[in-house]
Image (cartoon, rainbow, N blue to C red; front, side, top):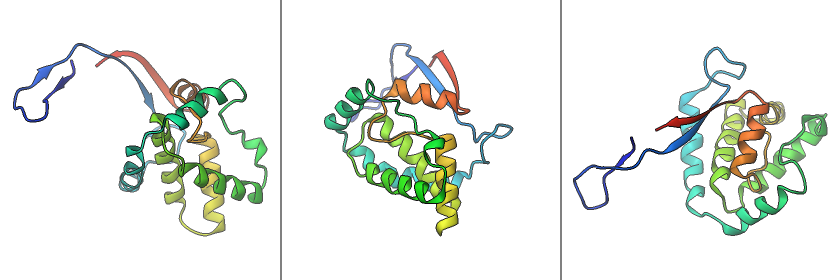
Length: 165
């Protein structure tokens, strides 16, 4: 069951059961991704929390209309060398500046996290982009929830569906 305490009240109100899906990241122990640095992940969340406040209908519409034109997933084969990956990282940063939709924040947190754990310098940036291409290969300003789940399921994320919360 899900519950809530409304603002200005002290009573816990039970809500109706809600169907949810859970997407498990590949950085869990015993899985294919790099080990999760919880402190760095929390910093990435804090940095991106501010951006999540400015939801954008325009960004949502861009995601809706682009879903029919192209796959929203980034193909690592399109970025075969450090120069192309450096340009991709610049494009990713530019897209972080767009006002977000719900999925934008998820994508930005993970991409920023991979950049933060890689460190600084050209080799670190290249390693960050390679992790982004492997584990979060999406543009934050045009990925809708269904596409997020579809693309991440292809690269090691595990979906658990129809769980009763």
